[in-house]
Image (cartoon, rainbow, N blue to C red; front, side, top):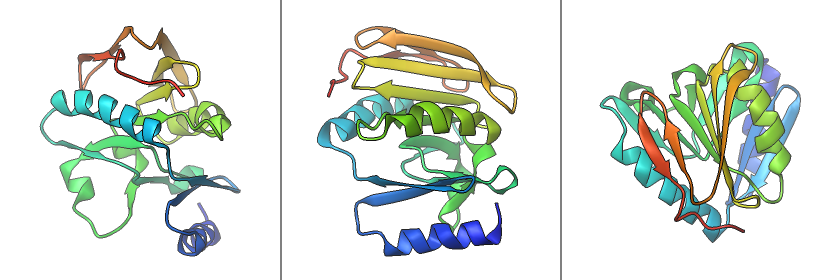
Length: 181
């Protein structure tokens, strides 16, 4: 990522009103509005389960900028789990390859950002697991086994079913309490 891209990203962050977040993917800046109550609730339902199965040394972090300057990406997942020491910083950016997972609750106003842009960007950024909770479609999708260009495994379930989350978490994610939009 060029210094100009970082300057644009920082300027966008400074000029946006509260309740917005911003990401960069190549030459594209993506701005998003604060999530709804259902979005927040579903995130908490998922997070509680991950928190109960998080191995020592990892901490949850919501809305943390994950950056990959070498591939020109800065993304901000709804939830990620990072090594303790990665968050021992005053900086608001963390190297993306440190993330154990990125969790996104698909935005009803911009689903392409989660289903296209982030499906493309996260494996490039070295993120091993990508979980998408799509309340519009009442589905949960886990992408895994990245090779640096794309994910090679995809598992889809409907709300109400159970999805196995692999190491380092290794648990069965329940989805019966998720609400649709």
